Image (cartoon, rainbow, N blue to C red; front, side, top):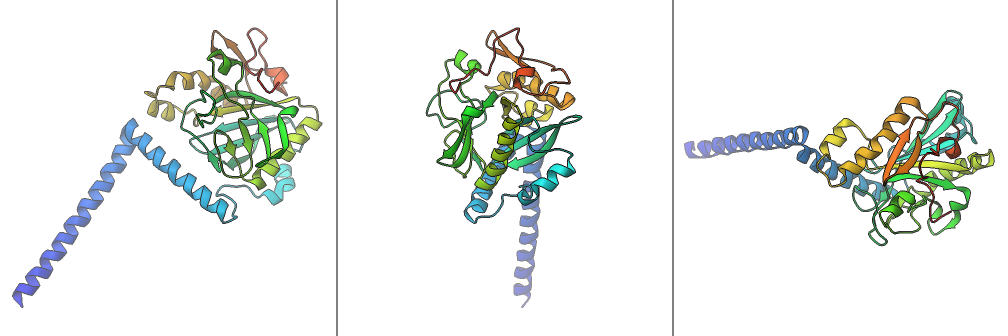
Length: 295
């Protein structure tokens, strides 16, 4: 009997030690993730993989992706934000966070109308380089009405205009890089059909009210100091630093900055408060970055 009690006590002791060891390991991994860029990148990659699998599951079940605004209340959402269909539009895309932001210009500058979850994008962080690399683009693009496709294989779509003149200055190749419906990507940004329907109808409304081009800023992630530090040793770090002023200027003024290409680099200057569209924010001192194969 004494031997049995001793054995039971040892098992409990081993279980406690194992539990403490497990807690210590989890705490160490968490601390590693919080304190080192490598750990944070690992955690980011894991979160992105989990998010992509979750998005695919929701899509297959026919459910709205987590974070999707109430699409049936569009009119109410517009009224609550003191915006209306047809207001000038601006779009930002963030790969790592799988988000597409849609901004509309009200009386006091651009206001964030909606943040939509991206169901799927492909490749990894960094710009698209060549046809067939299955990489979603990063950079500054604009969308004219002729770049819309109402009969897309994936419900509806618009062409980002890749490669723009910046991309072509580096001999980058590729075609038909879209934002579209569905949840599959070989270089595009897939938004699910219900979300794409709302984006599509708001884009058309802006065109009808006179907007000639809609500017799209496609970033690898929110251009915060944290993210730039974590990814500071990436081979594309200098490119991302080049894009950061566009992110900062818009966050500060709520007006898309003027954009130009000088010596194979993006250059940004603050736009005037009255800027409404692409034509108002194009810097004429250098070459337009937005001339594309779609034009």
